Length: 238
Image 1 (cartoon, rainbow, N blue to C red):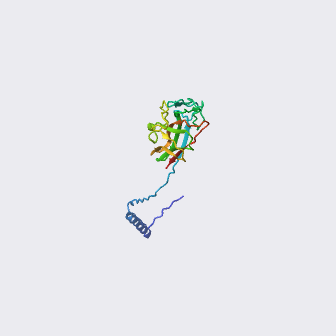
Image 2 (image 1 turned 90 degrees about the vertical axis):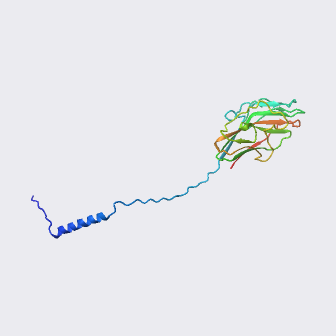
């Protein structure tokens, strides 16, 4: 098949040359590269974290601060009358109970019975400002209940700081006297919260332990029969 070649002549060539020159002129007029423009803005993200708190109580507690149902250890002080305490209480224990078992008062002198490792209060809170208080449900004729701190300086009121792990008692005797000894908290018969025994300016989401021994002091006027207190522990976290 024969092929043909078309030759453009005259005005058509001039038009093409004019268009090419105009394109080159326009291309040279464009900027080489525009500078980037950056704008920023901000927003505020806000919230209010609620206070969370938990209080768990264990009686006759072990080295880990946990409840024991075995026989407690009770120390006696007759001051120096003929009163007596039962060294093992009732021989076992019930959860959330501190049972001194049989106690025999003296006709003249007070009788003191110290229940070792009586209560461990496990406080958990995200608040760096909290208190723990105790109160008795009502007064019992001829009876006084004393709380002795285990760890935390060995006395109440205690300031809780540091690791605050469970601490068992180091006491080997029931204190002498008709009233709570120095450093002990004489628990009041009052509406909760009652008497503040511990406070802290540290948050303890993993837990802080407040352990105590309880001493029951019976006067010569203590009547016979089954007697009891209800002790209310109140945690206030702000």
